[in-house]
Structures are given as C-alpha cells and as structure tokens.
Amino acid sequence: MELWRAVLVWVAVLQSVVATKVLFLGPVSSRSHKNFYMGIVNALADDDIQVTMVSSFKPSKVRENVREVVLTGVELTDIFPNMFTSRTMSGPLTVMKVMPGLCADALGKEEVQHLLKEDFDLVFLSVFMSDCFLSIVYQLKVPLIYVSPGGLMVQLPLIIGNPRFPSYDASAVLGFQHPMTFMQRTISTLTHVAMDFFFFYFFSPRMEAECRRRGLCPDNMPSFWEISSNASLVLINGFVTACIYSEKVLVIAAFIMTL
Image 1 (cartoon, rainbow, N blue to C red):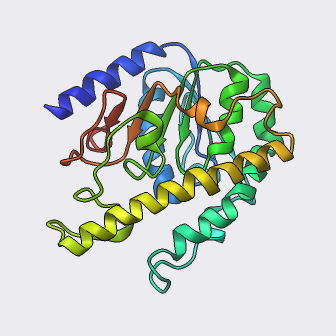
Image 2: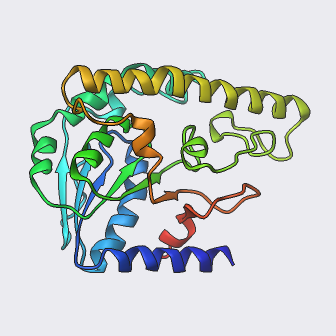
C-alpha cells in the first residue's frame, strides 16, 4: 500500500514539473549520497525534464537532459575520518565542526553563483549539511523539495512537523538492532534530544552566520528555519518502518531501486 502511495505521489511530482528546468543541489555529499540523488535525477531526465545537478563528484556518464556542475575543493571524503578505525560519533562530529565553512565555500563558487542568473522552476536540496544553499532557494523564489539520503535526519522532524519516536526508531548512527533494550531506548532518546539541541542552537546558527558574514546570504533574507519550513515535500532514502510519516514525507528508496 505504501509503495502505491509512493508511486502516485512521485507521478504527481513529475507531472507538476513537466517541461521545466530543475536545479538539484547536493553540494557536499558522499558518493553513496550522490548515487541516491541520481536515481531522482535520472527519473526526471527520463521524463524530458532539464536537470542541473550540483555535486562534488564527476559524472560517471553523460546523459541526455542532465547537466552536471562539479565543485572542487569541497569533497566530504577529504575531511571524513575512517569509519572502520574511528569512534562511532567522530565522523558526524567532525563534519559538523567544519561544515559551516565548507558549505559557504561551495556556495561561493563562481559556477554556483552563476546559477542565480538562470531560470529554474523547482529546487531539490539535499538536507545533508547544505543549509547555506537555502540562499539559492530564496533568491530564485521557487518551490523547494528536500531530499534526505539518510531517512528522517536530525532537523527534518521539527522542520516539517513530522513526529519522531527515538525510543523505538533509533538513529542509524547508533547501530542499535530491534528490539532495543531499555538502556538502548534511553540512549537513543537522549541522543535525539541532544542532537536536536546541537543542530538548532549551535550548528545551524553557525552556518547561517557564516553565510551572512561572507555576503552569500542577502541581508533581507529570512532565517534558514523560515525558508526550510516552507518546503513542499521531503523525499527520504529508507524503507517503510514503524515510523509515522506525514503527508509531506515520501519514502522512495524501494521505488527508485526499480527505475
């Protein structure tokens, strides 16, 4: 039943952007993230939609209706620690520490700023550490669709008003298996609260402040929170679980794998 809902909503998304130009922003991501994004990009391109894809990885092949803008010097692999030899949380903590500056570096690239001179009808924006690119969304004055390569990532539940119950729906970062013990449920809940606090009171404000300091966010631009709260839809990479999803959330991993 959920798969049919995914198909119907996805068809509606495609129909709403027929014969338009779409901008897909995945500026600072991993290779696996881009693989997920390309499933969406290819589906749009197959429907004769012109897609401009911004990422830090060179395209594996050239395909019709897709133009790729490759950003250099902002590769996530250069800063991410080895997950096999480092501690569980060292990767996320390292990324959060350097991302405000790295995101601003990507946003300030000449090839990115030139996109503001073009006309687009819709923006897909990766939710992964790309908050400063909300400046592009604001300046283009077009609808926003968030894309999450890792399920309902930290900020999404509050931004889109989707309930999250970490006592039984633990973050993948923790590596807990179902059924969780009482201690694991407690750790998951406290971690979720701590990550929410860290993101909304430390990480996101730092990224917005850096964007404004460099003049990449217009002085009259609303806060990141206000812009992101107006997202029309969220596409997430995952499979249907016991988690409750609102009407703005579409789980598409199983669907994309069949394309």
